Structure formats: C-alpha cells, structure tokens
Image (cartoon, rainbow, N blue to C red):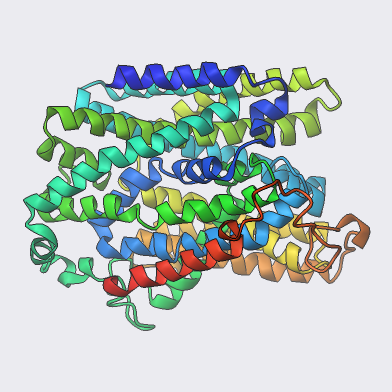
Amino acid sequence: MLIIYFVTVVAIGLAARRRVKSSMDFLLSGRSMPAWITGLAFISANLGATEILGMAANGAQIGISTFHYYLIGAIPAMVFLGLVMMPFYYGAKVRSIPEFMLRRFGRGPHLVNSIAFAVSNILIAGINLYAMALIIEAMLGWPQWVAIIVSALFVLVYIVLGGLSSAIYNEVMQFFVIVAALVPLTIVGMHRVGGWSGLKTALASTQGGLLMHAWKGTGLSDTTNPIGANWLTIVLGLGFVISFGYWTTNFTEVQRAFSARNMSAARRTPLIGAFPKMFIPFIVIIPGLIAAATVGNLFADGTITYNEAIPKLMQMYLPQGVLGVAVTGMTASFMAGMAANVSSFNTVFTYDIWQEYIKPHMSDRYYLGVGRLVTIAGVLVGIGGAFLASQFGNLMTYMQTLFSFFNSPLFAVFLIGMLWKKMTPAAGLWGYILGILAPITVYIGYLNHWPIFNYRTATAETLYAAMWSFATVLVVGIGVSLFTKPKPEAELVGMVRGVGTIDMTADMQKGDEKWYRSPLLLGVTALVLCVLLYIPLA
C-alpha cells in the first residue's frame, strides 16, 4: 500500500509538471484553483505532525481541553481570515504574507519577517519529518534516520516536479487517506474501552477526572485544569493571539487561498476548510484519550512519550490489512504537512528574499529555477530540523512555542497596521522585533524558573508568552508611531481600513455569485456549529 501511495504522489507531480510554465505557476499555481480544491488543501496542509501526533499527544496529556485548540483556537480565526483579512491580501495581489508586510511597512520589516518565516517553516518541516519517522519506525521497524531520508526524498520529488499545484492536488487526496486511517482506529479503540461511558470511567481518577472536562478548573483564580491556565488566558492567549496569529498570518495555510482563481474563491477557502476542521478532533483527540485510558502508566513512567500515543494504539488494535491503511494515512499526513511547509518556504525565499534583495530584475525562467533549487535546499535543512524536533516529548507544545515566537507578533503588527493608518514603518519594524524577543524571554524565564514566568505547565507558558508578545507589539507600535513619520495615504490604499476601497466583485467569475457560496453565510454557519459542538464538552 505504501508503494502504491508513493507511486501515486509522484505521478501527480509528473502530471502537474505539464502546467508549470512560469514561476507563478510553480509557486502559486497560476492563481487558478477552484474554492473546493483550495479549501480541502487548506485544511490538509494543517493535517501534519501538529494535528495527528501533536493533538493526540495533547489528548493523552490534557484530555478534552485539547478541543479548545479547534473550537476557539481555529474556527473563529479561519472565519476572520475569510471575511476580513483575505480581501486585503488577495485584493493587494501580493504573492506572500511577507510581501504584504513590504507593501504596508517597507523593506526593513519585510526582510525581518521573511527571514523569521523561513526559519520557522524549516523547523516545522522538521517536525513533520520526525513525526513521519516515528510512525514508520514503530510500524515497519525502519531506523529513524532511514525513515526521515526516504520520506523527505518523496516529498522533494513531487514538489520539485509540480510545485504548489502538485502539493495541492496531493493534499486533497491525502485528506481522504488520512480520514480513512484515523476513523477505524477511533472506532476500534472506543469499542475496546467500552464506548464513551467506559472511557469516562477509565479516566475518572486521572488528574481528578479533569481530562474529561473542557472548562472545569478554569476559574479566574483556579488553574487546576490540565492546561494550567484560567479561562481568560485560554480565551485571549489561545483563542485570540495564537489562533488568529497562526490562521491569518501563517503563509503555509494562507498560500492555498492565494492560489484560488478569484476573490470569492480565496475568501471561501478557509471557510470551506472550517467545516472538516471542527470534526477532525473526534478522530484525533479521542485516540489520545483512549491511549491515556489504556497505556497511561507507560506515559507516567517514561516508557513511551505522549508523541507515541497514535503509533502505540495502532500496534495494539489494528489488524494487518487495516494497519496498512493506517500507516499509509499517517505517511500521507506528514507528507502533506511537510509539502505545505516546503512549498510556502520556496515561495517566500524566491520572491521575498532572493528576488527582492539578492538578484532583482532577472527573467521569470531564472526565478523558476531558483524556486526548484530552494525546494531542494529546504528539504535538506528540514532533515536537520527533524533531529531537533526529536528532543521534545510533546510536539504540540513545541509547535505552540514556535507560534508564540513568530506568528503572534506578526498578527499584532498586521492587525494594528490594517486598522490604524498612522502606524509607521519604524513602529512595524521595532514592534515586530521586540514582539519576537518578548516570548523568547518568557520561554527562557519559564525554563529557568524565574518567579514572574513560573507558569504551572508548558502549555500555559505558550499562552502567556503569546499575550506578552501581543502586548509588546501594541505598546511599541503605538509608542514609536507617535514619534515617527507614517507612510502617505496614497501608498496605503487597499491595505488599511478606511483608506481606499477593495473591489469585492471585479475578480468574481460566473457562478460564484450564488447565494450558497456567500462567504458571510459560510462563516456564520461555521460559528454556530462551533458553539453547538462546545455544549456537550463543558
């Protein structure tokens, strides 16, 4: 099954290669994709190590509280991206998130943002590679280094061949393969523990029974919940700063919307993705809870790490035939995640670093060649990132730490810059730099037990670090803006609210005006479903 899968992804890369005529085709699919394709690719790009191993690890470690990462930590931000921020991005015709920083704040903030994005994306690509190696090692017995190199090679082949189009078409296929892998594991696991009631009984004594409650123990003065933070910190730190920072500024996902064929399709991309996103936790977090109920003693004594919750359940419960589907699905997941990281990394490096600062005014064919070479380099450096990721027991905590470092300050800069025309380039630069240094300082203080940063859990530390980052950007951004010169309004048209207008209809294509394709309708429906899903988890 793995051989068939690998052959299929390479074949898709070969087929997509025929469409690659320019750097825009290679790096942004020529802006030609329909919304349903980009919507599924948007969510599949997120179904990497953070989603499968990381969220299952969180399920085993902090229980039902992990649903916060979806219901307040994803859906509202995805709706905000589609309804509010995508018109700015797509309307400005930027090719990447850092390019929007260039248009709004100038070259200094743009260069810092481009480098920060490149570094973070390579680290995240390494996480996906390491997670893939864990699965292959556990299921097939391959040494980790062999699994890392073989997996990286196949991702490299199909991205170099077909670029973003190859990644997107593979991600749509991978979405269904991933679901096919996780549904049987969840069903069999629930049967073995005696259904939902059996699971609740098995976990009743674990952490005071708090693993089965989302909001219990989260009072303003109560941090006894598994996350170790009160409800206000969860809402602001996770539900606002980290969530909005990730889903609205992380080019790995947003790039899929940039490849859409028109404004309507671009806005609907995250909104379509929101619907499968809110149901993914039932096949990711539940297996983590099952692992806590069945092999929780192995986590406690250090025999296995929380990252190994899914592989352990597969070994325990799945027969040979279904195991083949599961291993293939997990491999698809991590390949989707890594391909998303690599395809966004090569776009930012080619357009925002190489073309802007190193070799401007070259032919398009030259940049197409650079994009392919950068893809190879990105995969090779990602292999090094995989060995770094192996040092962390919970990949989700590692990911949230990276988000607080890089995405939280960027979101703060963009949000203030989109709402306030007087925010200056100098404010954007220093707000962003100090916004990165603030969460790094919090992280160092947490590791060294400084009293001011002595949070109860590593998960709580990431939430507080994100809030410190946002607050730093807010104070520095406003303060520096009061003493420096803003850009002329003529240069801010379409990028700041109230400065010029964004034409929401000029880029529409026939058929996208149908009522059921309304972004507002999709967004409101997603938020209502989100609230309804929260009710039984309280």
